[in-house]
Amino acid sequence: MSAGNVQSVKTRSIANRINRVWFFRTLRNFLLVDMLLIAFLLVVWCYLGESAAGTDLNTHTGRSLSWDTALPFFHRLPSLTYTFTDGNQILQTVHNAAFLEAMQYVFMGLFGVEGLVLIIQYFSGRRTAQRLLWPLEKMAITTQQLTQEKLDPQMLHQLEDALATTSPLSPNDKLRTGNKELQGLEKAINDLLTRMHNAYREQNRFVSDASHELRTPIAVIQGYADMLSRWGKEDKTVLDEGITAIKSEAEHMNRLVEQLLFLARGDSGKNKPVFTQIDLTALIKEVYEEYQMITPDRRWRFVGDMPVHTTGDAGLIKQTARILTDNAIKYTSKDDSITLSAKVKNGIPCFEVQDNGIGIKQEDLAHIFDRFFRSDTSRTRATGGNGLGLSIAKWIVDRHNGYFDIVSREDFGTRFSVMLPQQPLSASSSDET
Image (cartoon, rainbow, N blue to C red; front, side):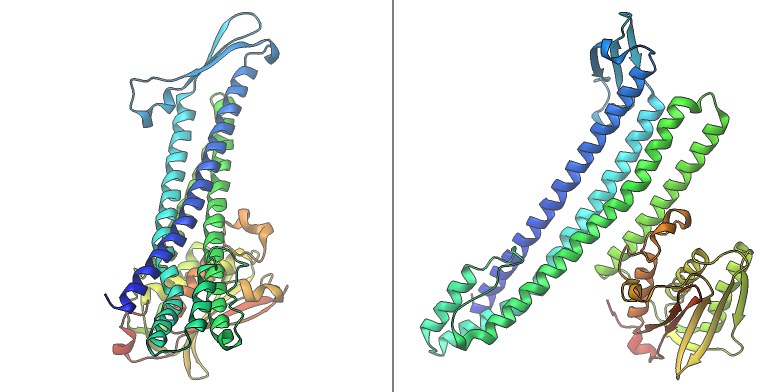
């Protein structure tokens, strides 16, 4: 086996080791949070059951939980029964199959999403680690080649010893050989380690933010399910309110999971745009007509007299236009104006979405495309945003070799211009992911 092949095997081994450390760390965090959440919900359920007995909780004895062991393990939760003896020495039984079944489905959905996140992190993390380690592997191969050319063995031993004592998992650990002739190599390796740490920190933040976003609607669903369990059977108003809220949060979770899947498929190269000749004017006019019908409480305008031709994926470009239009709706008030247009700007085909809403703070403009970033956090529950829409829009525009031109002032409005340079169809049809 050649020196290059040996080094490649070592690099893959190191990348897999780093990836496994992050994978199991994330798995441990997921399991810990899930167990704490399950324990908390069961304690609350038991407490509410005892409170309904109408006697002093301090006088209750003989508390126990049981379920039907004849059922398959994953179907036992709805059969869970809590029993205790109240202060009047009467055996009380607490059971609510509908509530427990809803709780079971919520956690099955949560486990499924967490499993998906772990799978995505494992495979994308391994590829990321291998890609980031490639310069280090190349340097190691070069070092071996230099050794064969009879360079100073002492210098190479210093480099080898320094590499052996440098941990890629510690963000503060840097390569130090003490040899001035190797300072350039030290800097290259330390820059590589810094990029690796930053990449894994971003990946870990993404997983943490996704977990937090999913935990919020689950908590809301749990709260309304508890309210239905206590009062919903007798009060139709409470029942209607609870069902509406649970349905709304379920839809929010569904949108979030779909967006996470889109970004995950994009990061792994599975979302491949299909490039054709398109007319931006006709496409944006379709979006304008859709929103004019479904959101009549805004003043809609469309500007586009001439066809604007470019190459791109019509479905993905329309998705980008819808994301920008949805944002304009969220951050404007009723009767505000929203303008959609298609034009050639500075010789480049583009479309624009402009509003006269609250605008974007100047310090936030650099972060609006970050995943889960929100400029106006106080409005997120009311508007239903989760901070992923603009990340998806940027992914789409990047795949078209395009870019955004954004003009925004607080309390004045925002204009998003999506620039889509014209390209030969044959070149743009190639795999860009």
